[in-house]
Length: 231
Image (cartoon, rainbow, N blue to C red):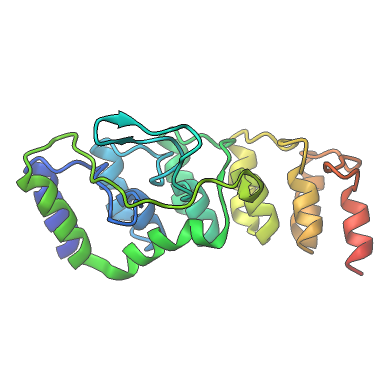
């Protein structure tokens, strides 16, 4: 409660909900990683972007637009919610307009900055917004430190990640929200579930009538192929 009050005061003083941690992670992504629902609600109420994890799009740096290929490889808040088994926060983000089909980086390093910021806790958050408030910038963003370029092969949609991890509550939430069950065609979520050995996720997708059981990945392998290979 104390941390939320401090952050609310900082936002009232002019700090931006889009100000970033030095790692580049957005405050919303960090709040999701920490499971801080009230803080997530506060940030969203104050205008935080539910799709912004700190690196899904090219940022401005020293007044010049960075090359489109030079993007920070950080996970979106939606992927962070799935990774941390928070279907409630996933639903909150969706209710606030998060794109349920947006692909974002999902390698382990893509989640580390948000998780680290969450572990840092109230002190780190207080310092971040205090600095932004002192700068008197209602829309100023903290310049992120350089990070690896996005590796498209290590990106996933929320439904792909949920199926891969066997996060059944998240799978149900995404399907209920209208997530595309067959996208991307190169690695359908059903195939992700089978490849990850998530039998319950496979059963859920099929029971919901949300997937083509004969859908193939880019190599021509179906969910059945992966299930048979996994024993």
